[in-house]
Length: 126
Image (spheres, helix red, strand yellow):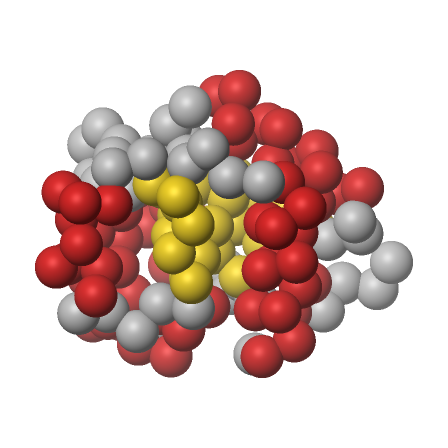
């Protein structure tokens, strides 16, 4: 597979099982996948790399997903539109997420086929 920016995905989730499952599925779908275990690690990777799509959990240690969205807003505002938020607790973050121009919000648990379709749609929109 030739690696294009739109084919690169950053999966950010502190839950190892979810992160690894999403990585495995997206690799099978021919995406180049990188991952981060929390928002701090995600910000480090986003500072060095450009990703076509960012799958972002909201509730994480050190730096949460809202912190990552704030980083993008300040340093790479065009990338907010490439974010798919994945959360089990949207109510706690609803106001923060609604104020950001993210591509989509998926509630956990999510259907893996829906996730793949959303990633494809996001990658095509970039």
